[in-house]
Image (cartoon, rainbow over all chains, first blue to last red; front, side, top):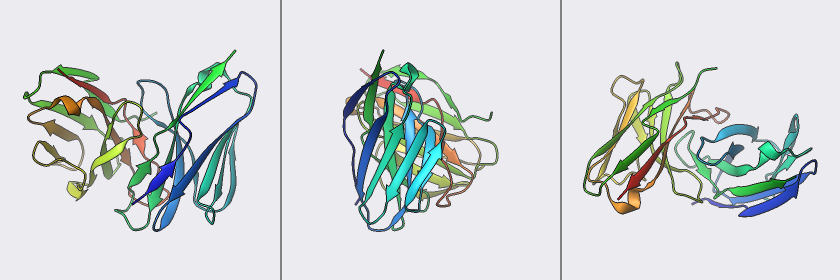
Length: 112
Length: 115
């Protein structure tokens, strides 16, 4: 099966940079996604990595190392509205096409 | 911007009652997913449809849960009878297809409380 691990909680201050790590184990890696989820709301897509390296999208960047089974989400210039849960999800080539396996999520709190 | 529609947003029921949730995916999206998310955990797939066909229901408790997508558009998830442990957020998501780069877009969810 899939084993996705990410920290349960993180805190940071407004304007700072925070890095949320995710490690995974799959039988056949086929892509990694990051989603943001505010309390009581639906997850919203942030980024997608399938090849090694950094994908940048405004204040958010995501990095992938397939050989290490490791990804991180980097959030720059933190704002209060970035307080949310950040979900790491992977696709496994051995599973139903399209199926995502989610981690438990990292609850980020941004303080003023 | 197109959205995945879900109703109701909240549902409170007593155990042993039947409940049903509805989802209307983004127009043109062939793949539809139902997830269950327990508080403090990530979403877990219950069932995946490709058009009107079920392609993965391995995690669906079939003794009490059922799902259908009769015309390959909107979908209904039913629980009968509901149990206390079914209290959770039920999320619907859709994607254009099930390709490796296809993004899943989520609806706002139905929060179920079983008393």
